[in-house]
Length: 312
Image (cartoon, rainbow, N blue to C red; front, side, top):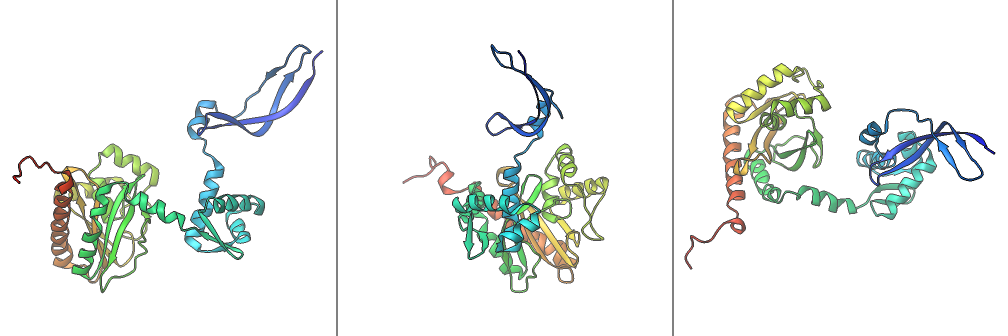
């Protein structure tokens, strides 16, 4: 005796725990003899190898969508979060409840906001390289000497990330918050970083993030960008002449303790002030000397140096 049952099944690979998860239904046939059970699937979609490589957990993505929404908008009620992300309120509530139980989301009345537990994650990320701890005083020193905005930017996943910033007396706001990510092709820091990478690596980054045009001055052609990177490599520093933000110029230099790039020091200011010799010579010289001092401080950290040559 056999029973033929028509169901619908679609599976996706869960890379976190090496299991296949049923996510939707499609036709297959199942025969049930009296002595045992035999199941035959008619799989749909891409093969499992591709699914394993490409599938991502939507629940994790959705939780981070909520987190980033709260970063950009501040405290929000559940209904607004659901509307903004176009998901059901019941689903939104489950994500928020989980994040709240884990103390990554706080609640004030009917509104949800980021929890202070994120502060520990930010600190841990910014100090994953212990050399980053040496950078902060140099950034503040640059801001004080120039009266402009100073930054330290490092690369992660093909983007530039602001790790430190300081503002001088005349600094302008350019939306450069700590942790903010920027594309590399249109920033002085990004050009410095890209100039230290192989052409293959640069093309990988451009393939992923593209060359979008932010202003009329943005470089949007790969050949032009590679010419610019060659010039940056030759002179040792990079300029951003209103390529990311209209009216804002930036100059950046590499920080390379022991010859290994760890990030860039930058000065940003309005284009009418960052111009001429001050912009093209004086600021690069100041940044290069500051970078050199920082590199020496990292390389010759007393805790890492041999003491065999010292006499008590």
